[in-house]
Each structure stands twice: as C-alpha cells, then as structure tokens.
Length: 158
Image (cartoon, rainbow, N blue to C red; front, side, top):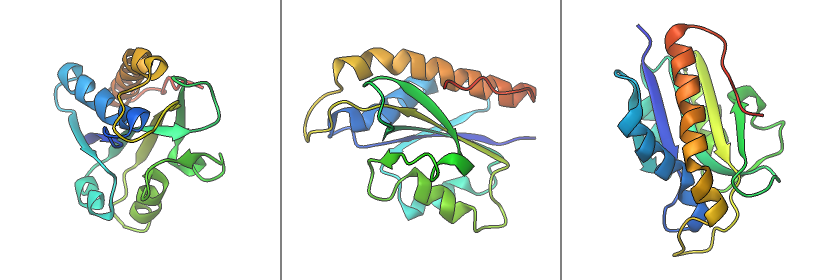
C-alpha cells in the first residue's frame, strides 16, 4: 500500500513564507484517512528521515516563480531546477529532492505545490492575496492526494 506524506514548508515568522505551513495545518483537518501531514516549517537535511518508506510526497511551500502573489503553481520534482524558481528557504525543496534522489528509497512520485509570495518581511502575517489563496492551495492538494489514492492522472494547477 502507498504511504503518502504531505510536508508543509516555510517560516511562519516571515509573512508569506509561512503559507506552506498554514496550508498543511488546514489540510490536516480535511485530508483523507491514511494521509500523513506534517508541518515542520523549515526544510532541513533532517527532513530526509521523514521520507523513509514514503511512496508519494507532496510539499506545500512558498516559492517565488515570478507570478502575482497568491498564484498557485505545481512542479514535479524533475522540473524544480529547470523552472528557474527561487526557493525562499535556505535549504529548500529542491535541495531536499536532490538529496532524496540519491537514496535507493526515493518516493515514486513527488509534487511541489507552490504559492507565489508577496511579502516575506520578518514578523509579519500572511499578505491578503496569499491568505485568500490558502483554500485554493488546500483544494489543489486534495486533488493531488485523491488522484494518488485512486491511481489516476493528477490535476495539477498551471
């Protein structure tokens, strides 16, 4: 049976950078049974341990992809570097997947749902456009999770 993990990434003390954590916390309340949702915030090399035995991983994060704040984008892990996105965290999502790709127990599928941040100043709350887009991010995450559970094609936002 598939082991599916959702990771909420970001720093809730830096405005929109915390959007992935906020979305994961909301998703935890509505995720299908059997889905593990964690919200460690900062992605670090230690996060690799969480991926042991995971067949599918979905990461929710704020990533600057040059769109309007609150826009949702999806990336398969093989497209993270070529897309030219700027991961806001110091050790970020791309680093995590580069490291896990070097192990024999890498997940079969991995998707990153990114929200375009607007404001990442220290000690600020989510900006209005990002706060208003959190429900859309949660719905996109549910779509990916349901698709993985059903074994069908994934509806990814573009």
